Image (cartoon, rainbow, N blue to C red; front, side, top):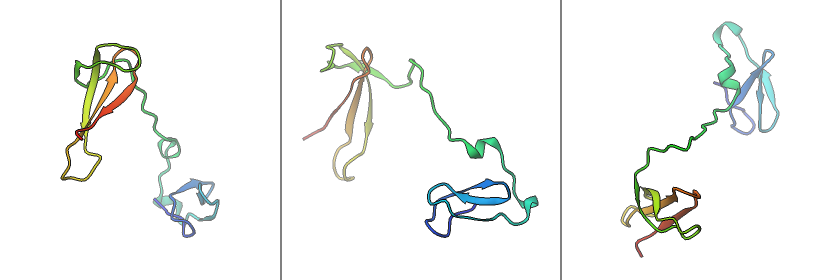
Length: 102
């Protein structure tokens, strides 16, 4: 892995050169025997979701469609001495809302 001297972004291998995807600068790769380039290095990974989820379900009223079931999870988004925030995702319309302890 090589990083750009100009902007610090990760560089990609291209025809014996390292090319920066952000600023466009390039530099020679050096000894080709030291590097292995695969297609996976050149493409970004896309995670596709299906309709099935591993999140737990609960009774919660969706403010968007009125459905009474939602997936839920908790996440610490404020400082550590404050409680976690609960997020809900409607099982019907996939509307997302949150609930804070204020």
